[in-house]
Amino acid sequence: MRVYWTETAVENLSGIYNYIAQTSTQYASRIVDRITRRSEQIAKFPFSGRVVPEFETEQIREVIEDSYRIIYYIKPEQIDIIAVIHGSQQITPSSVDE
Image 1 (cartoon, one colour):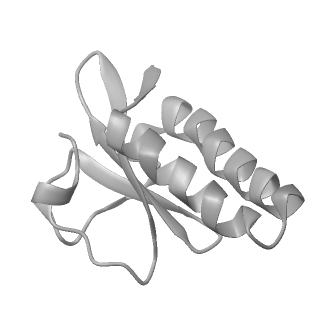
Image 2: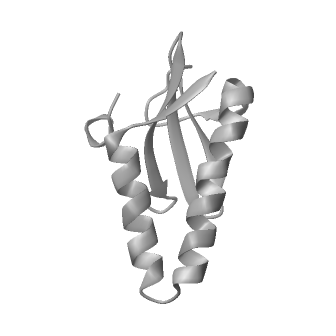
């Protein structure tokens, strides 16, 4: 199945890179690469992630990479990655693209 990164998710990823790059651009690149590679798992096994507790719907799931939650929405024809947030951050339905 095709994985699409929403504008919000891309902005989240850019913010993660910029924050980490203040200390180490090499480590920032590595983290972003690891996060983006998780989309391969999501494409092959969309239901492998757990249901996101804040949403409580089967179609909105997440996988964890390092300290980050990769939140995605399973649609009939594609999967949308709707947010990438640090595990300590709170998420609300209004803070993501659905």
